[in-house]
Image (tube, rainbow, N blue to C red; front, side, top):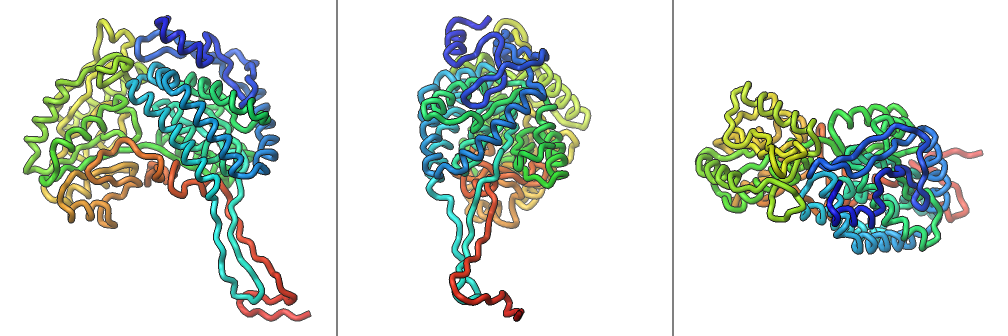
Length: 514
């Protein structure tokens, strides 16, 4: 069992030993099936709760109430929808400590990162509240006399959200809060590896929905394995699926949604690199490289996988990096003195070990790490030592994304060579360069530079503010979430032409007299 303080937090957030796993916002639905999954914490290996997977019966119930709720919600003025989101943000503020704790305990990220994830939810609520008064269209000059043209944006309907274990709550909020102020309703399928945080979120927002006397179906939660994800992807009643996860999963979602001409937002794998030139501030480059590599135990889609370092400073950088790695504290992420927590489960540990073996088989040299920790404090079997490997960019394993704290050190001589290596992978999410050379910085962010959706200068690959559009290219999927004009993906564009004259002129000067 978890300790007393953990038990108290779980109780406050509505997490019981056996959880109902379907919520329609204001109502919890008891699953009729018997297929369950035990959720054990990677922190200490202890059983937290069990969830019962949804069946087709609950799925259809959720779809029914979501369709009904959309008819109501789309008619609510956008600023009024924003007011509900504002209250949700305040409810999250009140529960930030406890929800962040649960996120850390359930999936293993540090407590600071758990709280940071909840803060992301609060921030996107604030962003969405402002957005609710800024869903702007355009006015367009018509070529026809006494005609007015304009562009409007209308909600799509039901938005399906499929999220991953590494950010068990924040990615939902990126989608759900923006979708909600746009007039959509949402159905959320969280990762079956970390569903309890999602359950806690719905307990938190339920109070807001009930206090405002809103109908069920605006925010919906349904927990199951890949079969629920497949149902959602195939369902013509869901015009948009936003899916976060592996490239393999994203290809399947894209295939199913595309086959019915639906829309998808895909946030998939990243194989992110930091380029460090001889003109870099090495101390800052080291800090960013270490956090990017070991934060969330390397289980972020923006984690730093490759360090591409100029040959003139390579040995110095490598030596300093190894010394820092040797000082990292690995252990319970709820202890804020520790830097690195566990991987999500023992399957992830196997993937970590296999990747290291593959790198060595291809000629890579382990500089540090390559070890699974055992003994007191590591009873879950999910703790590994962050690993540095001297490698070449063309190695097969370097070309792949490994969701673990493994970072490859690669040498370059000319910046053009480094940029070519940075781009020479299938994924295109995040990238960074450390340099105080203005020409190098601008080259990296120009059309001749990074081909990723995110290209940073003098900050790392990991961690993004909600004000910018988040997403990447190539096998990362091309989707964009969160800030900027990402809201347009959750709406349908409509062009209106209004004739306020007495005549009936046609475009392009076409004559048609009757």
